[in-house]
View 1 (cartoon, rainbow, N blue to C red):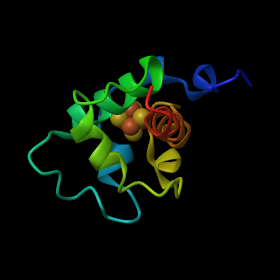
View 2 (cartoon, rainbow, N blue to C red; view 1 turned 90 degrees about the vertical axis):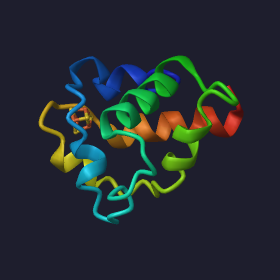
View 3 (cartoon, rainbow, N blue to C red; view 1 turned 180 degrees about the vertical axis):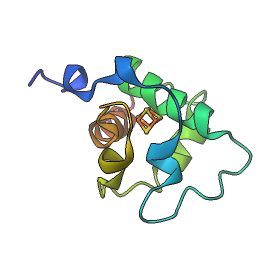
Length: 98
Ligand code: SF4
C-alpha cells in the first residue's frame, strides 16, 4: 500500500451513483441539507485525491463527519471502488487540515 492508500481505493472507477452514502447502514445520509449525493461523492473524492481546502470544503467536511467508517459502503458499491478507504483518506486529510 502507498503512503495514503489512494491508489488502492479505485477512485477512477467511480460512477458517482451515490450508493455508498445512500445505503449507509447508519442511515445518516438520508437528509443531506440540500446537497446532492453526486456532489457529496465528488467532494469527498476530491478531498481524498487533492486534499482538504478549509472554507471551500466545509459543507463536505460536515457531512463526512456523519461517517463512522462502518464499511457497509464497500458492500454496496457496484463499481469496485473502496468507498470506505476513500472516506478514511478524506477524513485524514481533513484532520490534518490539508
Ligand atoms: S464509490 Fe461506488 S457506490 Fe460510491 S458513488 Fe462511486 S460507484 Fe457509486
